[in-house]
Length: 190
Image 1 (tube, helix red, strand yellow):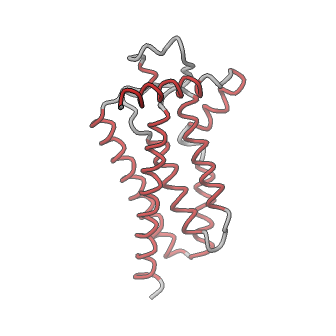
Image 2 (cartoon, rainbow, N blue to C red):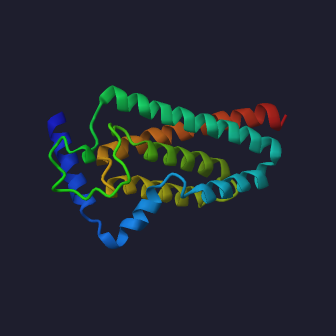
């Protein structure tokens, strides 16, 4: 059964990866770059400050730093534990079937750190700001999905790497959202 899942995963990766064209490569390389969305994070921090104030913002910054550290480190634990080579490593003989345009190709890919971190940030910020901006969470979830797909587009992750990363990120984002709410109630609003 696992062999079939991996076979379908590889076939879906090849299909999705080959949807790309040279015309869009630079756009997807920008999307997949970790530094591209710093302005988005700055806007989210400003919105948190605007709705909750300085003290709460400091709590949120600490919680988000812990969340990203946690999500990133657990991702690395899974990568080292499963040791699933990335598709760009060509251990499955894919190099003549895929478009590899990423700047580099890491060693292991299960599961995607970009996917888990972007989803954790989307869920955390979306839930925290939902009372004030009801549709923001949908925009952030869409953004996270685009970031996740960029990893397939550039040739560094299989679809299951992305799906598991998004799932873990959603769980992590929700748990740290709950932690943030607890800390705000206990130390800021009392």
